[in-house]
Image (cartoon, rainbow, N blue to C red; front, top):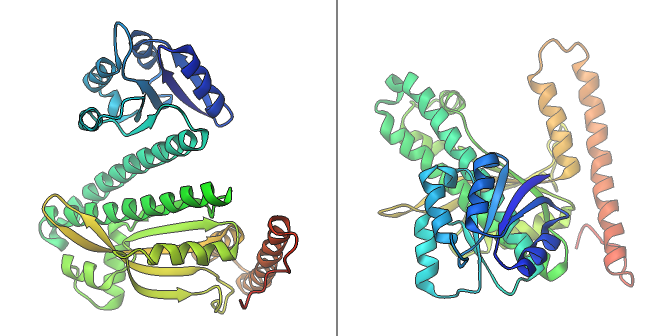
Length: 356
């Protein structure tokens, strides 16, 4: 379990937050800023989030943030302010200092849980994407002669990274709203990746296009890729519909391999989207591919991927035949599980019908 630090001079607030979060995290507490800094000094690399009160005697929340910036802990530990303060200027000041989010008092359990969870996930995603961009920049320096100058490619990859974060944020908002209304989540997890430079080069070469920034933007639609893992097939279609219904998301292409599977049994819903990215001096639309699968579909695809890329397999045809049988069984199982869920949620209703 991940560790969270709660800092508040009021014991009742610490106790409330502890009870809300204890089932999902290891929760440690501090009753003032000095004790918080001491704990951060000892184990900042273990703490995944800091819930920080602003107004405390001796060393307040602002002092803690300043010290965290000096020690560069703020780049490793996201901060959520816990406060009854609603003044816009105070919130703006906190965001300018590097705070990730606010949780206002009095505490609502579902809001606390969702804000903490989303902040940790987004913070980790941001750090992972920065690492990926840095690694790709390193690789591109080695390939600089093929693309010309490094700066345009690096800027383009940051734009694709931003598109991933934009789609992830929108999906997580939909997930939170759905969870609040229906008391369950439409998806289990989101996986994202930036296509590696070597893969970009090879794909352009296969398509017969020179390796240029312009051709990457024009002919490759999956530089930014996301995979959304859902529990049930109807959640896939509901979530995809809610996403593309947003007025600034543009659906460029849809491939429904659930209703029309590939010959080998592969099933997934693929959407190619134009996603708005807000850059310092402009708003730009960036392509992103989003794949929706159930847990079973994703497990099958992972196994099939190993078969495709693993060498020295003697009985490939027999394994392919078995995988096709498994794919058909998985489809039947997904819909049976969905029907059982419908009976549990709506005991008076008839079984779910795939054609409706």
